[in-house]
Length: 254
Image (cartoon, rainbow, N blue to C red; front, side, top):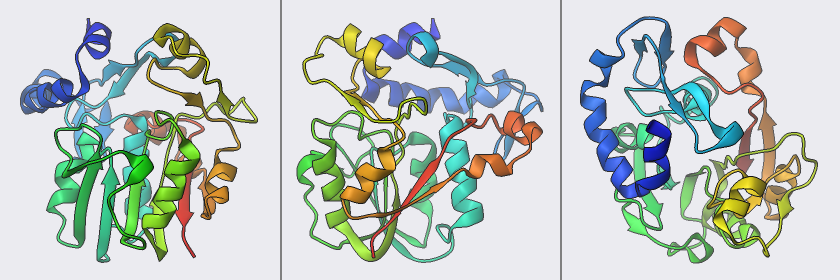
């Protein structure tokens, strides 16, 4: 039933419904087996998530924050390895993740702008191929799980680089097939079912491989892949429900 709702309800409506769900989720899923580091609360179990096939995963969606494995890993990375929560930053958050949105918006050290094509929680609606911001505007940019959806990923990476200030940094995560050396694209594949089979989701236009970092470097970024998840013990990875093998791509503009 949960997977059926994910597939059939439009994303803007899902976001609104999930906000209602969060109000009583702590009671329904009470327990101490798993912990969400974003809100510091514990639960007896997490929810399943994923649209189809290998993408379906059990016990990964936090009932309290609606965070997935990658969100919780990013939170821990930002907290423990960056000055994100302490230093002043002018920040652009593209396709803002719901689990972060309210927290980031309330942070006094952030001059925080959100952008998306149609998200109801975005401040500015735009197409990332032609972003409406001047050159060298933002200290920090987050753009996670977006570049697999866009028509021209190279152009969008160029836009991310253009908008970032020299000395700034960003994190741009994508679904990554670590078994694939090079990114797989085929513009002749337009049927949603075929895209799901080839690119893991019906609205994906490519499947990034291990050359993802090179794509970012071609846009001008200094790319620092970080296997931060491997600094945690197996017990911690299970406790926080973190993604095994996930690389965090820290991108800097010199």
